[in-house]
Image (cartoon, rainbow, N blue to C red):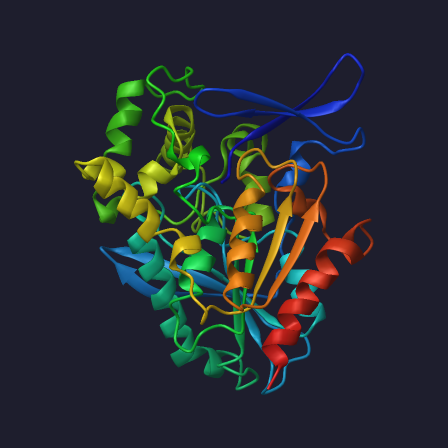
Length: 385
């Protein structure tokens, strides 16, 4: 869910990823040819997009970004994308590297939806933001795209924490999406890896904030303080502001590493050191009893909400993922198939959380194996009459 990785080498020059959580450090060997951390960030996005404000809540402008299909017609479908970042970082400006080229190659429009980040809002607010964006698109997308879109022919997808949101909202929208795409998203908050208690002795932070300052920021529930975008920890420390702006295709008046943004990134790091991010996004500390907490975990778990009317669903997950175990996807897929829902599953061996960022285009080895069949499944479902 946006857990941070740092690459290093062993004495045998074997690349590894060191993944920190609240109580353990996982050392996960990868292929010797696996690339450095920068490759697990979204690549610079195509510049032929338009940005739009779909709502303003508590003074916060909520925006989305539209990349139009290069071969649009009145029957063209569109993809809604919800980004990852442990519910409190990431951005809608740059979906995973493969999303735009793969779907536009199939003639799709691609839309990145911005939503407010925790802790000032919680998962219900994020879901409502995405639903409001969908409602705005239903009213405005046709005119924006000169009627070169089928407003009922769409899919929704997301990566990591965005996979939680896409699988939640995918079961709520009306009309429902033709397909849902879940890229290593947490979908069952009752699983043991998401239900462990907070770490009482978290590791020291590496940002220029005291623990008291971070605790105060984490406790902030004022929705007027919410923001829509912030870089990951590693990204904020190793990638310059100008490069982030270039990757996201934003100007300094839209995004900068301002103090508020830096604090957001530090809070995400603070949350990660203390315990699973789901505790924050579900606001479990607001509840008094374990029974109430258990019920809330279940209520907001896509795995437990889905029924036989759920849309066809595609899964992409790395089998070396220690941030969101692949069992999250496998068990949800198994449940959906048991309900009679059509499912497509794609799992890549020995790769970590965020591995799909490597797939920047058809020239990359593995594109035809992991990306093309996934997109073909979604495309087939969307175009079926």
